[in-house]
Length: 125
Image (cartoon, rainbow, N blue to C red; front, side, top):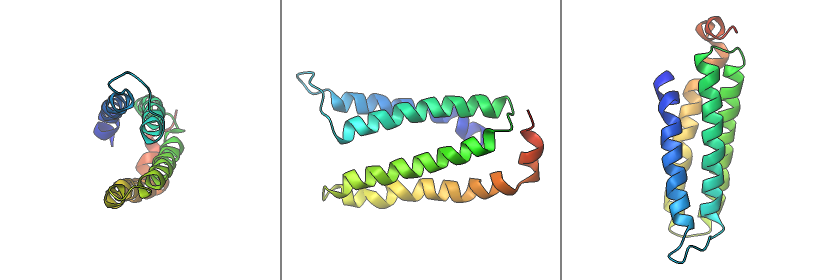
Protein backbone atom coordinates (compact mmCIF):
# COMPACT_ATOMS: atom_id res chain seq x y z
CA UNK A 1 0.00 0.00 0.00
CA UNK A 2 2.85 2.41 0.82
CA UNK A 3 4.41 2.35 -2.65
CA UNK A 4 1.09 2.68 -4.46
CA UNK A 5 0.01 5.52 -2.20
CA UNK A 6 3.34 7.30 -2.72
CA UNK A 7 3.25 7.21 -6.54
CA UNK A 8 -0.50 7.76 -6.95
CA UNK A 9 -0.27 11.59 -6.80
CA UNK A 10 2.19 11.50 -9.71
CA UNK A 11 -0.20 9.46 -11.84
CA UNK A 12 -3.14 11.70 -10.91
CA UNK A 13 -1.10 14.82 -11.76
CA UNK A 14 -0.37 13.29 -15.18
CA UNK A 15 -4.10 12.72 -15.68
CA UNK A 16 -4.78 16.35 -14.73
CA UNK A 17 -2.24 17.58 -17.27
CA UNK A 18 -3.79 15.38 -19.98
CA UNK A 19 -7.26 16.68 -19.06
CA UNK A 20 -6.02 20.26 -19.18
CA UNK A 21 -4.46 19.63 -22.57
CA UNK A 22 -7.76 18.17 -23.79
CA UNK A 23 -9.66 21.18 -22.46
CA UNK A 24 -7.69 23.71 -24.45
CA UNK A 25 -8.48 23.64 -28.14
CA UNK A 26 -6.35 25.03 -30.92
CA UNK A 27 -7.79 28.48 -30.29
CA UNK A 28 -7.32 28.17 -26.50
CA UNK A 29 -11.04 28.01 -25.79
CA UNK A 30 -12.16 25.92 -22.84
CA UNK A 31 -14.47 23.04 -23.68
CA UNK A 32 -16.80 22.19 -20.81
CA UNK A 33 -18.19 18.73 -20.20
CA UNK A 34 -16.42 15.48 -19.66
CA UNK A 35 -12.88 16.87 -19.87
CA UNK A 36 -13.60 19.54 -17.26
CA UNK A 37 -15.13 16.86 -15.02
CA UNK A 38 -11.94 14.79 -15.40
CA UNK A 39 -9.81 17.80 -14.54
CA UNK A 40 -11.82 18.61 -11.41
CA UNK A 41 -11.76 14.96 -10.38
CA UNK A 42 -8.00 14.80 -10.89
CA UNK A 43 -7.37 17.93 -8.83
CA UNK A 44 -9.61 16.71 -5.99
CA UNK A 45 -7.95 13.27 -6.08
CA UNK A 46 -4.48 14.84 -6.05
CA UNK A 47 -5.27 16.88 -2.95
CA UNK A 48 -6.87 13.87 -1.26
CA UNK A 49 -3.84 11.70 -2.07
CA UNK A 50 -1.45 14.26 -0.63
CA UNK A 51 -3.51 14.29 2.56
CA UNK A 52 -3.64 10.46 2.62
CA UNK A 53 0.13 10.27 2.20
CA UNK A 54 0.61 12.62 5.13
CA UNK A 55 -1.84 10.62 7.27
CA UNK A 56 -0.16 7.34 6.26
CA UNK A 57 3.45 8.35 6.88
CA UNK A 58 2.64 10.09 10.17
CA UNK A 59 0.61 7.03 11.23
CA UNK A 60 -2.50 8.97 12.13
CA UNK A 61 -5.36 6.92 13.52
CA UNK A 62 -7.79 8.57 11.09
CA UNK A 63 -5.94 7.12 8.06
CA UNK A 64 -8.01 3.92 7.67
CA UNK A 65 -11.30 5.85 7.68
CA UNK A 66 -9.88 8.48 5.33
CA UNK A 67 -8.71 5.75 2.96
CA UNK A 68 -12.17 4.19 3.00
CA UNK A 69 -13.64 7.59 2.18
CA UNK A 70 -11.18 7.91 -0.70
CA UNK A 71 -12.31 4.57 -2.11
CA UNK A 72 -15.92 5.72 -1.92
CA UNK A 73 -14.92 8.95 -3.70
CA UNK A 74 -13.06 7.09 -6.46
CA UNK A 75 -15.84 4.58 -7.13
CA UNK A 76 -18.48 7.33 -7.02
CA UNK A 77 -16.56 9.58 -9.40
CA UNK A 78 -15.96 6.63 -11.72
CA UNK A 79 -19.70 5.91 -11.72
CA UNK A 80 -20.33 9.54 -12.62
CA UNK A 81 -17.73 9.29 -15.39
CA UNK A 82 -19.50 6.15 -16.59
CA UNK A 83 -22.71 8.17 -16.92
CA UNK A 84 -20.87 10.68 -19.11
CA UNK A 85 -19.32 7.92 -21.21
CA UNK A 86 -22.50 5.89 -21.62
CA UNK A 87 -23.92 8.67 -23.79
CA UNK A 88 -21.29 7.99 -26.46
CA UNK A 89 -21.17 4.63 -28.26
CA UNK A 90 -17.34 4.60 -28.14
CA UNK A 91 -17.42 5.20 -24.39
CA UNK A 92 -19.53 2.15 -23.65
CA UNK A 93 -16.58 -0.11 -24.42
CA UNK A 94 -14.49 1.59 -21.71
CA UNK A 95 -17.11 1.20 -18.97
CA UNK A 96 -16.04 -2.21 -17.61
CA UNK A 97 -12.39 -1.16 -17.29
CA UNK A 98 -13.37 2.15 -15.76
CA UNK A 99 -15.20 0.45 -12.92
CA UNK A 100 -13.52 -2.92 -12.41
CA UNK A 101 -10.09 -1.79 -11.15
CA UNK A 102 -11.26 0.54 -8.36
CA UNK A 103 -13.81 -2.05 -7.23
CA UNK A 104 -11.17 -4.80 -7.09
CA UNK A 105 -8.78 -2.46 -5.29
CA UNK A 106 -11.42 -1.56 -2.71
CA UNK A 107 -12.44 -5.21 -2.33
CA UNK A 108 -8.86 -6.05 -1.35
CA UNK A 109 -7.99 -3.10 0.89
CA UNK A 110 -11.27 -2.24 2.65
CA UNK A 111 -11.55 -5.53 4.57
CA UNK A 112 -7.87 -5.31 5.46
CA UNK A 113 -8.23 -1.76 6.78
CA UNK A 114 -11.34 -2.65 8.77
CA UNK A 115 -10.26 -5.99 10.28
CA UNK A 116 -6.47 -6.11 10.49
CA UNK A 117 -4.86 -5.98 13.91
CA UNK A 118 -1.69 -4.70 12.25
CA UNK A 119 -3.57 -1.65 10.93
CA UNK A 120 -4.99 -0.94 14.38
CA UNK A 121 -1.53 -1.26 15.94
CA UNK A 122 0.19 0.88 13.29
CA UNK A 123 -2.09 3.90 13.06
CA UNK A 124 -2.21 5.04 16.68
CA UNK A 125 -1.30 8.77 16.61
